[in-house]
Image (cartoon, rainbow, N blue to C red; front, side):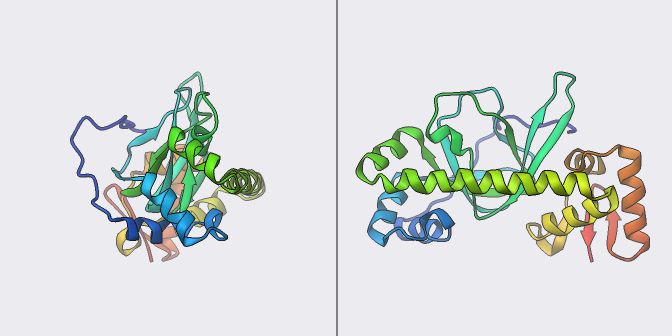
Length: 228
C-alpha cells in the first residue's frame, strides 16, 4: 500500500465510555449471544475503548500481540506482506467483528497484519484479562473457539470468491461492501490502495473502475470513489 502508517506517534483522543455503553456494544457480537448481562458486564469492565485512524496498521504480522479488538465501528483489511514487499489482502471485515483474537490465547506472533480502511473504533481486551475471565467463566473459551471456526469458514468463502470471480465482479462486490462503512458511500481510498485490496494490477483495476463509472455505478474523484 502507499505508505502504511504504523502506530501513530500522534496523540489520539481515547473515546470516553461508560460500563453500560460498553456492555451494550458487546451484546451485539455473536460470540456473546448466550452470555448473561451480568457476565457481559464483567467482560465490559476489562475492555478499553480505542479509536483507530484511517490507514493505521494496528496489528502487525510477526509481532507478538497480547490483545484483541472488538470492532464496533468501521472496516478493516487483513493482509500479509511477502518477502518482496507485495501486499496480499486476505479478508475485508466490517463492524461488529472480533479481530486479533489469536492474541488472546497464544504467546505467538500475529499471523497477519490488520489496517483500518476507515476511521474505526474498538473495545480492546488484553490476553491477561481474557484468561482471568475464562478462569471464572470457561464458557468464554468455547465462544472464542466458535469465532475461530466462523473465521475459517468465512476465509474459505473469501478464497472461493477470489478464485471463481473475475476482477470486474470482485471489484464491484468489494466497493459495495466497503462503501457502507464510509459517509455517503464515498470511499476515501486511492486507486493504489484499492488495487492492494483486490489482488489485481494497477492498470487492470483502473480499467475496471472506469468501466463501472461509465455504467453509472460509481463516480471517481481525487483519491475517492463514490458508490451510486
